[in-house]
Length: 538
Image (cartoon, rainbow, N blue to C red; front, side, top):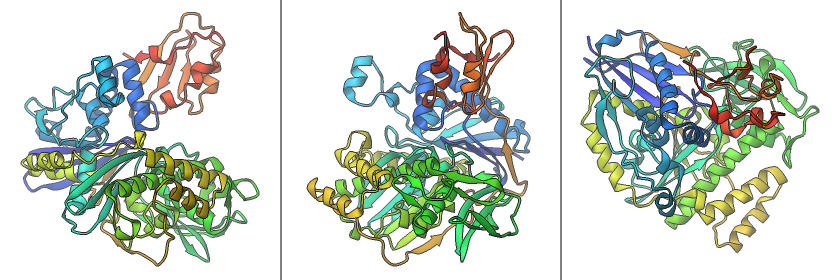
C-alpha cells in the first residue's frame, strides 16, 4: 500500500489527511489546536519571520508539520506524495521562500529595498528538500497563489464550492483570521482579503478555542438560548440552556459538563443573542457583571464581543468594497458561499443578521475546509495543478488591496463607530451618501440555507481524528544586564515565558502572542530584554 498526505496550512493551525493512493480513501485526520509561530494572526507571523529570519520561522513550521504527520497512523516510509494548500505567507514559510515581497506592498517599496517578487506558481517539488521526514523521492504538490495575500486557499474556496460555475452574481468568503473573499459578476472575478483578526477562529477570546471537541459552536433559541457543543466527531450536539439577561442555566443538556471553550462561530452567535436581547450598547455588555455566561464556566465579556464586532466590520467592509468596485448594488447580489470552519458552523441566519453575509442574500451555501479538500483532490489528480494555474492566471487582474482602498477605509471606520459608539444605521447610510457609496439595505425575510457538510472536515477517515497538542518549540536566550527579576515572566498574559535560575529566557512559541504583544520586552526595568534576539532551542 502506498500513501499520500494532504495538508492545509492555516493561520490558526495545521490540518492533515492520510490518504490511500490506490483508491483515494481518507484513512485518518490530524489537526493542531493553534499555530506554532508566535502571534495570533498572519501579520504577527509575517513580522516574526522578518525580525528573526526566514530560516528560523521555517524550522519552527516544519517541526510542527513533522509532528503532525507522525500522528496519522500510517507507515511514513510508504508515503509517495504530499499535497499542501494555504495562503501565500503560510506556504512560503513551509517552503522556505522569502516573504519580503509579501511584507512590503507596492512597487516603490520593493525597489527601495531591492526586493524580488516571488512567483508562487503551481509546481512539483521534493518533500524532503523542504524538511519533511519522509522517504527520498516523495513528491510535493503545491497549487498556485492568485496574487499577494490571495493564495491557494482562496483558489480552493472558489474551486470546491461551485462559485466558479455559478452564472449569477455571487460572493464567496473563507471566514477566518485573514478573510479571503471573491465576487463573481458575469465572467469577471474581484478578489480581496480583510484582516478580520483571530476572533473568527476563537482566538484572542478569553475562553476561546478552535473548532474541536468541547467547543461551543452555536446557540439555538428555544425559549432560552441552548448551547451547541462539538462532540468527539466535531459535530454540534445540544448542551445547556442559558438565560443571558439573568446569567442562569435554565436546563442541562446532553453535553452538560463537556464544554471546554467557545469557538468563533459561538462568539458570533453570542453577538446575535446580545443584539436580540438589547444587551450590547456603545461597546459594553449590559449584564450585571459585564459578561455572558454559558455552560461549564465558559463566558465572554465586552472585550470579546468587541473583538468579534471588529471582525464583522472588516468582513462587511470587504463585501461593500468588492460590490462598489464591480459597480453593482446589494439587491443584485443574492447568492453567498461560506467556507472554512467558521463558515461551516456559524448559523447563516444569525450571520446575515449581524453583517457577515450581505442582507440581500437569499441563497446561502455552507462548505467546510475547502483548502484541505482541494489538497486531497490533488493527491489523486496531480494534473489538477495545471488547471488551477490557468484559473489563477485568469483572475489576477481584478484584485483589490483593501489596506489602501478608500471605500474600505470609509466603511470600516463607520463599522467601528456603529459597534463601539452606537452609530445608528440612518447616520451610517447618510455618511455613505456623502461619500458616493450605496446604502446598506435592511435584513428582511429568511434565506434558504444549504448546509453542504455537517462539519468543516467532512471525512475524518476510518482511523478517526487526532488533535496534536505538542507543537511549537522553545525560543531561548540570555540578555546582558538581566537581573533575573522575572517581571517579564509575570507580565506575560499567555504564561508563555519562563526565566530559568541561570537567567535564561524560555518562550513557548505556540503560546506567545509575539509582535502583537511584546509586554515582556516593554516591562523590563533594565531595558535589556530584546524579544527578537531569542533563538530556537537546540
